[in-house]
Image (tube, rainbow over all chains, first blue to last red; front, side, top):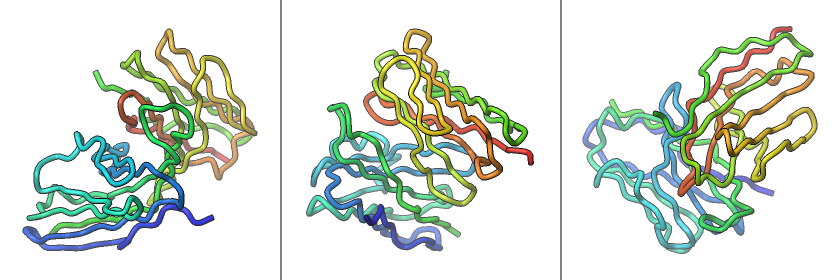
Length: 118
Length: 108
């Protein structure tokens, strides 16, 4: 079946602009996660959705970052007033279920969106 | 102390040999442990997960977990050049936390 998809694959924007990154999870997966990965680092957790609600947004670096998942499927990560330090690959993952339950927690990643802020 | 620690490598292993990748974690309450493979320029791909102490084998891959020592490892038998990648250890406590990854190179 189809995996996690993300659009766009690449986004170049100017400092101060607003961007939206989209994630379409695996069908039937209730949990959706956003991560950010910088060169030479592992993915860094940003936010986790269980259904439509943000169950854990403790990884969002500041109030310029916001994410929604209005119908419990597709999610959009929104970044306001972008800064050069926001440049990274933004990864989305989904799992069949999410914490705190065990099992079926395996996360599958999309191809990522490479964001470059000039 | 980092929550999940891995040797960044690079780790070079001859083709056909066993590659051993190690990971330690700090949260004793961690429940689930994952190994992801990431090729350059690509996203992480889940290759193994383990929830209980001991060994778990899947083809050429074996994951080993020792919760008392807070240690998880990945063994790759009969290493192939296509195994050359960065291997990320991920540990689930309240959320999934990744190490920085170990870069593995299989030498033909």
